[in-house]
Image 1 (cartoon, rainbow, N blue to C red):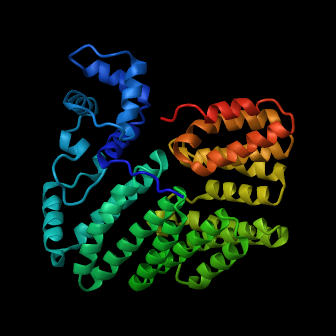
Image 2 (tube, rainbow, N blue to C red):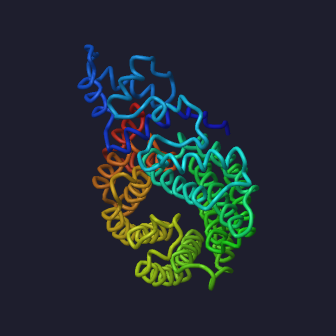
Length: 409
Protein backbone atom coordinates (compact mmCIF):
# COMPACT_ATOMS: atom_id res chain seq x y z
CA UNK A 1 0.00 0.00 0.00
CA UNK A 2 1.35 3.48 -0.82
CA UNK A 3 2.00 5.90 2.00
CA UNK A 4 -0.54 8.68 2.55
CA UNK A 5 1.11 11.96 1.55
CA UNK A 6 1.87 14.24 4.48
CA UNK A 7 -0.14 17.41 4.90
CA UNK A 8 2.10 20.45 5.60
CA UNK A 9 2.08 21.59 9.21
CA UNK A 10 0.89 25.07 8.21
CA UNK A 11 -2.18 23.51 6.54
CA UNK A 12 -2.89 21.50 9.69
CA UNK A 13 -2.70 24.68 11.75
CA UNK A 14 -5.15 26.45 9.43
CA UNK A 15 -7.64 23.57 9.56
CA UNK A 16 -7.34 23.31 13.36
CA UNK A 17 -7.91 27.05 13.80
CA UNK A 18 -11.20 26.78 11.88
CA UNK A 19 -12.46 23.60 13.58
CA UNK A 20 -11.50 24.91 17.04
CA UNK A 21 -14.01 27.70 16.45
CA UNK A 22 -16.61 25.23 15.17
CA UNK A 23 -16.75 27.03 11.80
CA UNK A 24 -17.61 25.33 8.53
CA UNK A 25 -15.65 26.28 5.42
CA UNK A 26 -18.66 28.37 4.42
CA UNK A 27 -18.54 30.18 7.78
CA UNK A 28 -14.86 30.96 7.25
CA UNK A 29 -15.50 32.20 3.71
CA UNK A 30 -18.12 34.62 5.01
CA UNK A 31 -15.76 35.79 7.75
CA UNK A 32 -13.00 36.44 5.20
CA UNK A 33 -15.43 38.57 3.19
CA UNK A 34 -16.44 40.45 6.34
CA UNK A 35 -12.91 41.35 7.47
CA UNK A 36 -11.44 42.05 4.04
CA UNK A 37 -10.77 45.64 3.00
CA UNK A 38 -10.90 44.59 -0.65
CA UNK A 39 -13.73 42.98 -2.66
CA UNK A 40 -13.52 39.19 -2.62
CA UNK A 41 -14.85 36.48 -4.90
CA UNK A 42 -18.16 34.72 -4.23
CA UNK A 43 -18.50 32.28 -1.32
CA UNK A 44 -18.36 29.05 -3.43
CA UNK A 45 -15.07 30.14 -5.00
CA UNK A 46 -13.69 31.08 -1.59
CA UNK A 47 -14.66 27.66 -0.23
CA UNK A 48 -12.65 25.99 -3.01
CA UNK A 49 -9.68 28.22 -2.18
CA UNK A 50 -9.98 27.43 1.55
CA UNK A 51 -10.20 23.71 0.79
CA UNK A 52 -7.00 23.91 -1.25
CA UNK A 53 -5.21 25.74 1.56
CA UNK A 54 -6.40 23.34 4.30
CA UNK A 55 -5.33 20.25 2.37
CA UNK A 56 -1.93 21.78 1.59
CA UNK A 57 -2.44 21.75 -2.18
CA UNK A 58 -1.14 25.32 -2.31
CA UNK A 59 0.03 27.79 0.31
CA UNK A 60 -1.91 31.06 0.71
CA UNK A 61 -0.22 34.11 -0.74
CA UNK A 62 0.58 37.19 1.38
CA UNK A 63 -2.91 38.67 0.93
CA UNK A 64 -4.74 35.55 2.15
CA UNK A 65 -2.17 34.94 4.89
CA UNK A 66 -2.97 38.36 6.35
CA UNK A 67 -6.70 37.80 5.83
CA UNK A 68 -6.72 34.45 7.65
CA UNK A 69 -4.81 36.00 10.55
CA UNK A 70 -7.33 38.83 10.74
CA UNK A 71 -10.30 36.45 10.62
CA UNK A 72 -8.93 34.23 13.40
CA UNK A 73 -7.40 37.02 15.48
CA UNK A 74 -3.99 35.31 15.39
CA UNK A 75 -0.50 36.38 14.42
CA UNK A 76 1.18 34.93 11.34
CA UNK A 77 3.54 33.02 13.60
CA UNK A 78 0.68 31.56 15.65
CA UNK A 79 -1.27 30.48 12.59
CA UNK A 80 1.44 29.48 10.13
CA UNK A 81 4.47 28.92 12.35
CA UNK A 82 6.72 31.32 10.45
CA UNK A 83 9.08 31.57 13.43
CA UNK A 84 10.84 28.46 14.69
CA UNK A 85 9.31 27.34 17.99
CA UNK A 86 10.82 25.00 20.58
CA UNK A 87 7.92 22.54 20.10
CA UNK A 88 5.65 22.68 17.03
CA UNK A 89 1.94 22.87 17.94
CA UNK A 90 -1.38 23.74 16.40
CA UNK A 91 -2.72 27.28 16.62
CA UNK A 92 -4.89 26.58 19.67
CA UNK A 93 -5.36 29.20 22.43
CA UNK A 94 -5.02 26.50 25.11
CA UNK A 95 -1.50 25.61 23.94
CA UNK A 96 0.14 29.02 24.21
CA UNK A 97 2.65 28.89 27.12
CA UNK A 98 3.24 32.07 29.10
CA UNK A 99 6.57 33.86 28.75
CA UNK A 100 8.18 32.11 31.72
CA UNK A 101 7.12 28.64 30.59
CA UNK A 102 8.15 29.40 27.01
CA UNK A 103 11.61 30.27 28.30
CA UNK A 104 11.77 27.08 30.35
CA UNK A 105 10.79 24.93 27.35
CA UNK A 106 13.36 26.66 25.15
CA UNK A 107 16.09 26.15 27.75
CA UNK A 108 15.19 22.50 28.18
CA UNK A 109 15.33 21.80 24.45
CA UNK A 110 18.69 23.53 24.14
CA UNK A 111 19.97 21.72 27.25
CA UNK A 112 17.83 18.58 27.86
CA UNK A 113 19.39 17.98 31.28
CA UNK A 114 17.52 21.12 32.45
CA UNK A 115 14.06 19.67 31.78
CA UNK A 116 11.74 20.38 34.71
CA UNK A 117 8.28 19.32 35.89
CA UNK A 118 6.52 22.34 34.34
CA UNK A 119 7.90 21.47 30.90
CA UNK A 120 6.81 17.81 31.16
CA UNK A 121 3.35 18.88 32.36
CA UNK A 122 3.01 21.22 29.39
CA UNK A 123 3.95 18.39 27.01
CA UNK A 124 1.27 16.20 28.61
CA UNK A 125 -1.27 19.00 28.18
CA UNK A 126 -0.15 19.56 24.59
CA UNK A 127 -0.70 15.88 23.74
CA UNK A 128 -4.13 15.87 25.40
CA UNK A 129 -5.25 18.89 23.35
CA UNK A 130 -4.05 17.34 20.10
CA UNK A 131 -5.89 14.11 20.92
CA UNK A 132 -9.12 16.08 21.16
CA UNK A 133 -8.47 17.99 17.94
CA UNK A 134 -7.88 14.68 16.15
CA UNK A 135 -11.46 13.66 16.98
CA UNK A 136 -12.58 16.53 14.73
CA UNK A 137 -10.00 16.81 11.95
CA UNK A 138 -8.88 13.17 11.75
CA UNK A 139 -5.46 11.55 11.80
CA UNK A 140 -3.98 12.41 8.46
CA UNK A 141 -3.13 16.10 8.98
CA UNK A 142 -1.82 15.55 12.52
CA UNK A 143 0.66 12.75 11.85
CA UNK A 144 3.62 14.92 10.69
CA UNK A 145 3.13 17.35 13.54
CA UNK A 146 3.06 14.67 16.25
CA UNK A 147 6.09 12.99 14.66
CA UNK A 148 7.95 16.29 15.00
CA UNK A 149 6.87 16.66 18.61
CA UNK A 150 7.95 13.13 19.50
CA UNK A 151 11.50 13.82 18.37
CA UNK A 152 11.67 16.73 20.82
CA UNK A 153 10.07 14.71 23.63
CA UNK A 154 12.59 11.89 23.09
CA UNK A 155 15.49 14.33 23.54
CA UNK A 156 13.93 15.67 26.74
CA UNK A 157 13.27 12.16 28.11
CA UNK A 158 16.93 11.26 27.64
CA UNK A 159 17.91 14.36 29.60
CA UNK A 160 15.49 13.90 32.51
CA UNK A 161 16.87 12.63 35.80
CA UNK A 162 15.46 11.02 38.93
CA UNK A 163 11.68 10.60 39.39
CA UNK A 164 11.07 13.01 36.49
CA UNK A 165 12.74 10.53 34.12
CA UNK A 166 9.92 7.98 34.55
CA UNK A 167 7.29 10.63 33.90
CA UNK A 168 9.12 11.89 30.81
CA UNK A 169 9.44 8.36 29.41
CA UNK A 170 5.73 7.80 30.11
CA UNK A 171 4.93 10.93 28.06
CA UNK A 172 7.15 9.54 25.30
CA UNK A 173 5.17 6.27 25.44
CA UNK A 174 1.89 8.22 25.14
CA UNK A 175 3.17 10.05 22.07
CA UNK A 176 4.17 6.73 20.48
CA UNK A 177 0.75 5.27 21.31
CA UNK A 178 -0.99 8.25 19.70
CA UNK A 179 1.14 7.96 16.56
CA UNK A 180 0.37 4.23 16.43
CA UNK A 181 -3.35 4.95 16.62
CA UNK A 182 -3.16 7.55 13.85
CA UNK A 183 -1.15 5.16 11.64
CA UNK A 184 -3.79 2.48 12.21
CA UNK A 185 -6.57 4.96 11.49
CA UNK A 186 -4.76 5.83 8.23
CA UNK A 187 -4.43 2.11 7.38
CA UNK A 188 -0.67 2.10 7.78
CA UNK A 189 -0.83 -1.18 9.71
CA UNK A 190 2.85 -2.13 9.74
CA UNK A 191 3.82 1.31 11.04
CA UNK A 192 1.06 1.12 13.65
CA UNK A 193 2.32 -2.21 14.94
CA UNK A 194 5.89 -0.90 15.20
CA UNK A 195 4.76 2.17 17.14
CA UNK A 196 2.54 0.11 19.46
CA UNK A 197 5.53 -2.09 20.26
CA UNK A 198 7.68 0.99 20.94
CA UNK A 199 4.94 2.50 23.13
CA UNK A 200 4.58 -0.71 25.13
CA UNK A 201 8.33 -0.95 25.72
CA UNK A 202 8.51 2.66 26.94
CA UNK A 203 5.45 2.14 29.16
CA UNK A 204 7.11 -0.88 30.81
CA UNK A 205 10.31 1.13 31.24
CA UNK A 206 8.36 3.94 32.92
CA UNK A 207 6.47 1.49 35.14
CA UNK A 208 3.11 2.72 33.79
CA UNK A 209 0.82 -0.31 34.01
CA UNK A 210 -2.24 1.54 32.67
CA UNK A 211 -0.41 2.61 29.53
CA UNK A 212 1.20 -0.82 29.00
CA UNK A 213 -2.22 -2.46 29.31
CA UNK A 214 -3.88 0.09 27.02
CA UNK A 215 -1.24 -0.36 24.33
CA UNK A 216 -1.76 -4.13 24.28
CA UNK A 217 -5.50 -3.53 24.13
CA UNK A 218 -5.10 -1.18 21.17
CA UNK A 219 -3.07 -3.86 19.41
CA UNK A 220 -6.03 -6.15 20.07
CA UNK A 221 -8.28 -3.59 18.37
CA UNK A 222 -5.92 -3.55 15.40
CA UNK A 223 -6.15 -7.36 15.18
CA UNK A 224 -9.95 -7.09 15.32
CA UNK A 225 -9.99 -4.51 12.53
CA UNK A 226 -7.92 -6.89 10.38
CA UNK A 227 -10.30 -9.79 11.07
CA UNK A 228 -7.84 -11.75 13.25
CA UNK A 229 -10.25 -12.61 16.06
CA UNK A 230 -8.08 -15.22 17.88
CA UNK A 231 -5.22 -12.74 18.13
CA UNK A 232 -7.65 -10.04 19.26
CA UNK A 233 -8.80 -12.21 22.18
CA UNK A 234 -5.24 -13.23 23.14
CA UNK A 235 -3.98 -9.64 23.18
CA UNK A 236 -7.04 -8.37 25.07
CA UNK A 237 -6.55 -11.04 27.72
CA UNK A 238 -2.82 -10.31 27.85
CA UNK A 239 -3.61 -6.65 28.52
CA UNK A 240 -5.36 -7.81 31.70
CA UNK A 241 -2.19 -9.28 33.19
CA UNK A 242 -1.74 -5.83 34.72
CA UNK A 243 -5.09 -5.98 36.59
CA UNK A 244 -4.63 -4.86 40.16
CA UNK A 245 -2.34 -2.06 39.02
CA UNK A 246 -4.69 -0.53 36.46
CA UNK A 247 -7.87 1.54 36.73
CA UNK A 248 -11.37 0.16 36.37
CA UNK A 249 -11.75 1.97 33.06
CA UNK A 250 -8.62 0.38 31.59
CA UNK A 251 -9.78 -3.03 32.82
CA UNK A 252 -13.21 -2.43 31.32
CA UNK A 253 -11.71 -1.50 27.96
CA UNK A 254 -9.77 -4.77 27.94
CA UNK A 255 -12.83 -6.83 28.88
CA UNK A 256 -14.97 -5.28 26.13
CA UNK A 257 -12.20 -5.82 23.58
CA UNK A 258 -12.04 -9.52 24.50
CA UNK A 259 -15.83 -9.62 24.17
CA UNK A 260 -15.68 -8.13 20.69
CA UNK A 261 -13.05 -10.70 19.73
CA UNK A 262 -15.30 -13.54 20.91
CA UNK A 263 -18.18 -11.97 18.98
CA UNK A 264 -16.06 -11.93 15.82
CA UNK A 265 -15.48 -15.65 16.39
CA UNK A 266 -19.25 -16.17 16.69
CA UNK A 267 -18.97 -17.14 20.37
CA UNK A 268 -22.06 -15.40 21.70
CA UNK A 269 -21.97 -16.65 25.32
CA UNK A 270 -18.32 -15.75 25.86
CA UNK A 271 -18.81 -12.40 24.13
CA UNK A 272 -21.80 -11.36 26.22
CA UNK A 273 -20.18 -12.58 29.45
CA UNK A 274 -17.11 -10.42 28.83
CA UNK A 275 -19.26 -7.46 27.82
CA UNK A 276 -21.36 -7.74 30.99
CA UNK A 277 -18.15 -7.76 33.02
CA UNK A 278 -16.92 -4.72 31.09
CA UNK A 279 -20.18 -2.88 31.76
CA UNK A 280 -19.74 -3.25 35.53
CA UNK A 281 -16.16 -2.01 35.31
CA UNK A 282 -17.09 1.00 33.14
CA UNK A 283 -19.88 1.99 35.53
CA UNK A 284 -17.46 1.79 38.47
CA UNK A 285 -14.93 3.88 36.53
CA UNK A 286 -17.57 6.55 35.85
CA UNK A 287 -17.98 7.06 39.61
CA UNK A 288 -14.31 8.09 39.87
CA UNK A 289 -13.48 9.39 36.40
CA UNK A 290 -10.75 11.63 37.84
CA UNK A 291 -8.70 8.49 38.56
CA UNK A 292 -8.60 7.44 34.90
CA UNK A 293 -5.54 8.22 32.70
CA UNK A 294 -5.89 11.18 30.31
CA UNK A 295 -6.16 9.07 27.14
CA UNK A 296 -9.39 7.52 28.51
CA UNK A 297 -11.23 10.86 28.23
CA UNK A 298 -13.60 9.52 25.55
CA UNK A 299 -14.44 6.20 27.17
CA UNK A 300 -17.74 6.45 29.02
CA UNK A 301 -20.97 4.49 29.21
CA UNK A 302 -22.21 5.92 25.90
CA UNK A 303 -19.03 4.80 24.18
CA UNK A 304 -19.38 1.36 25.70
CA UNK A 305 -22.91 1.04 24.32
CA UNK A 306 -21.49 1.46 20.82
CA UNK A 307 -18.87 -1.22 21.50
CA UNK A 308 -21.70 -3.56 22.47
CA UNK A 309 -23.48 -2.59 19.28
CA UNK A 310 -20.45 -3.60 17.20
CA UNK A 311 -20.28 -6.94 19.03
CA UNK A 312 -23.95 -7.65 18.36
CA UNK A 313 -23.39 -6.73 14.73
CA UNK A 314 -20.64 -9.37 14.58
CA UNK A 315 -23.08 -11.87 16.10
CA UNK A 316 -25.66 -11.06 13.42
CA UNK A 317 -28.29 -9.55 15.75
CA UNK A 318 -29.33 -6.40 13.89
CA UNK A 319 -32.05 -5.45 16.35
CA UNK A 320 -29.78 -5.46 19.40
CA UNK A 321 -26.95 -3.82 17.46
CA UNK A 322 -29.16 -0.98 16.25
CA UNK A 323 -30.52 -0.36 19.74
CA UNK A 324 -27.07 -0.12 21.33
CA UNK A 325 -25.65 2.00 18.51
CA UNK A 326 -28.55 4.45 18.45
CA UNK A 327 -28.35 4.94 22.22
CA UNK A 328 -24.59 5.37 22.13
CA UNK A 329 -24.62 7.77 19.20
CA UNK A 330 -27.15 9.97 20.97
CA UNK A 331 -24.48 10.69 23.62
CA UNK A 332 -21.59 11.29 21.19
CA UNK A 333 -20.78 15.02 20.74
CA UNK A 334 -21.11 16.40 17.22
CA UNK A 335 -17.42 17.34 17.04
CA UNK A 336 -16.41 13.65 17.21
CA UNK A 337 -16.77 13.63 13.45
CA UNK A 338 -14.52 10.70 12.66
CA UNK A 339 -16.20 8.45 15.22
CA UNK A 340 -19.71 9.55 14.33
CA UNK A 341 -18.91 8.48 10.77
CA UNK A 342 -17.76 5.01 11.86
CA UNK A 343 -20.56 4.28 14.31
CA UNK A 344 -23.06 5.78 11.87
CA UNK A 345 -21.85 3.29 9.25
CA UNK A 346 -22.23 0.48 11.81
CA UNK A 347 -25.78 1.63 12.55
CA UNK A 348 -26.60 1.64 8.83
CA UNK A 349 -25.29 -1.93 8.63
CA UNK A 350 -27.46 -2.95 11.60
CA UNK A 351 -30.55 -1.35 10.05
CA UNK A 352 -29.89 -3.11 6.75
CA UNK A 353 -29.48 -6.40 8.66
CA UNK A 354 -32.95 -5.87 10.13
CA UNK A 355 -34.35 -5.35 6.63
CA UNK A 356 -35.02 -1.63 7.18
CA UNK A 357 -33.45 -0.38 3.94
CA UNK A 358 -35.01 3.07 4.18
CA UNK A 359 -33.44 3.74 7.60
CA UNK A 360 -30.13 2.27 6.46
CA UNK A 361 -29.96 4.60 3.46
CA UNK A 362 -30.84 7.67 5.56
CA UNK A 363 -28.19 6.82 8.16
CA UNK A 364 -25.58 6.07 5.49
CA UNK A 365 -26.23 9.39 3.73
CA UNK A 366 -25.86 11.22 7.03
CA UNK A 367 -22.51 9.52 7.75
CA UNK A 368 -21.07 9.76 4.22
CA UNK A 369 -19.59 13.31 4.25
CA UNK A 370 -17.48 12.72 7.36
CA UNK A 371 -16.62 9.19 6.24
CA UNK A 372 -15.08 10.41 2.98
CA UNK A 373 -13.27 13.24 4.73
CA UNK A 374 -12.03 11.55 7.90
CA UNK A 375 -12.59 7.80 8.19
CA UNK A 376 -11.44 5.34 5.53
CA UNK A 377 -12.92 2.41 7.47
CA UNK A 378 -16.35 4.04 7.57
CA UNK A 379 -16.10 4.87 3.86
CA UNK A 380 -15.34 1.23 3.02
CA UNK A 381 -18.22 0.05 5.19
CA UNK A 382 -20.65 2.42 3.48
CA UNK A 383 -19.55 1.16 0.05
CA UNK A 384 -20.26 -2.38 1.27
CA UNK A 385 -23.71 -1.36 2.48
CA UNK A 386 -24.50 0.32 -0.85
CA UNK A 387 -23.41 -2.83 -2.70
CA UNK A 388 -25.50 -5.13 -0.49
CA UNK A 389 -28.56 -2.92 -0.82
CA UNK A 390 -28.16 -2.88 -4.59
CA UNK A 391 -27.86 -6.69 -4.67
CA UNK A 392 -31.07 -6.92 -2.62
CA UNK A 393 -32.85 -4.59 -5.04
CA UNK A 394 -33.43 -1.97 -2.35
CA UNK A 395 -33.74 1.67 -3.48
CA UNK A 396 -31.21 4.22 -2.30
CA UNK A 397 -27.94 2.41 -3.00
CA UNK A 398 -27.07 4.77 -5.86
CA UNK A 399 -27.65 7.79 -3.62
CA UNK A 400 -25.11 6.41 -1.13
CA UNK A 401 -22.54 5.84 -3.90
CA UNK A 402 -23.05 9.36 -5.23
CA UNK A 403 -22.63 10.82 -1.76
CA UNK A 404 -19.37 8.90 -1.28
CA UNK A 405 -18.11 10.12 -4.64
CA UNK A 406 -18.80 13.77 -3.84
CA UNK A 407 -16.13 16.42 -3.19
CA UNK A 408 -14.06 15.93 -0.05
CA UNK A 409 -13.59 19.00 2.18
